[in-house]
Structure formats: structure tokens, C-alpha cells
Image (cartoon, rainbow, N blue to C red; front, side, top):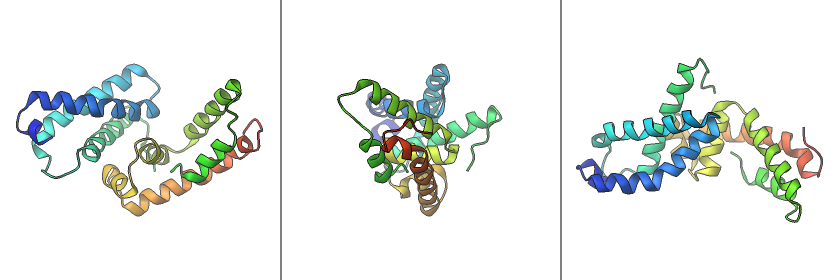
Length: 179
């Protein structure tokens, strides 16, 4: 990032190739329109380019880029009249894992659909915390910085998301059809 901030175009290519898939996945989980996902990813890197000289040496790049992406996402939601309102922890992962029968591909697909549907029911503010924590591997302190909230608020959102997902996926763990 330092080389890119100083004008090295090759450094941008390296940053883009390493970060773009994760940024794209971040938007894919929040937006169903593939064209919009591509636009939001591109907008994030354009904003990163414009702000590259504001990056402070020694600052971790990945959380910095996801902070930009989170703000791009909020702007996009607001422009569409959707409020960016208000962790899938190991317990929920255990529930999902308990429902998995590796030999049955149909059950795996059905389980994946139920988990995806349960995630979609979460408020946007909780869903983004789940994504950043479980899928991107950020800790709650980083999530707080990315979203502009406290670490405690990020933990509370993850806890609430976890409780909701446990409730919604309880039948899945028992081998039922889910709610």
C-alpha cells in the first residue's frame, strides 16, 4: 500500500488482485443484483484510489479498504431508500455442521438454502457484522472501526444475530425442514 500511495501502478494491481474477491463477496452477500455488485466493487476501488494518500503508513490495509466498502454500501442503500439499519459464532456453525450429512447432496443444498435464507432475515446491521466476522475473518475491534461503531456494539450485533440464527436454524439441526 505504501508503494501504491507513492504512485506505483504495479502495487495497485497487487492490491486489487488480493482484495477484490473479498470486496466483491462482501457486496454479493448484501446485494442481489450482480451488476450493482460489480459497480459497488469498482466504486470502492475508485474511492480507495482517491484516498490512497490519506492511508497512514503502518495502518492495516484490509480493514481500511473494508471501511471504504462499508461506506459505499451505506451510500448505495440510502440512495435506494433502504435504511442501513441497526456473528455467526461457533454455536451456529455447530448447528449447521450437525445438520450436515456429507453423503446427501440434496440435503446439503437444502441446508445451504435454509442457512442463506436465515441470514437474509437478519437486519442489515447484523448481517454485515456476520459477514465481516465469519466470512472475512475480522475481529470485533476491526468491525467496529470499519462500521464506525464501538467494539461492544459490534459484539452486541453479533450476539443478537447469533440468537436469531440459532432460533431459525434449530429445526435444521434436528434434521427437520427449518422454519
